[in-house]
Image (tube, rainbow, N blue to C red; front, side):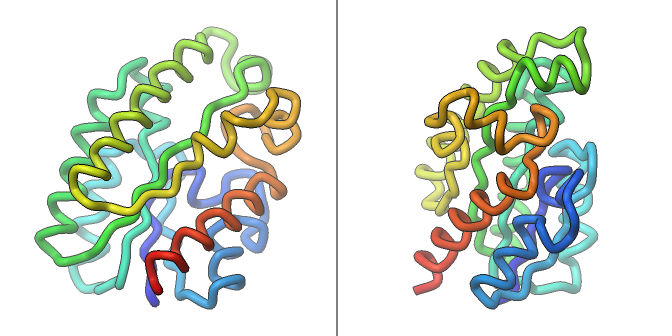
Length: 193
């Protein structure tokens, strides 16, 4: 199975080696052909433009779509994230490309404030992101799309444990990518059976 993974820094594997990135780990673990189309800092409308270009000749069996965090970080709203994801899903439908949605995980506020930007309220950003995740969940159900709910996995952890798996409060370290890869592999195998 060829899987096109469209996303941002969480998909490209910011801060970890290529072999530690969840996309590579899924390829090794499940034997799928994984195409990493992550781009650091990308927003959903940027991903929509890339989707149109990159899938014009490529015919993946499935797209794994994970994004929206940069929209929320930059704009303190999920309006453009919702607009972009809708555009991507409509285009995927027109191209007959099945989609699995990745539901993003929460940030670690104190780490993000210390290591990224002290002028952002990461608790507020997490609240917006949680609303976005709930919207994505409902959206996936309405459209009959499978999803990988990373929010539930990481938000169920104690904050101290989430710190252990975080590189900088926004991105995961190698161990966090392993957790993500294990979960996504399980979800992909389930829908592939």
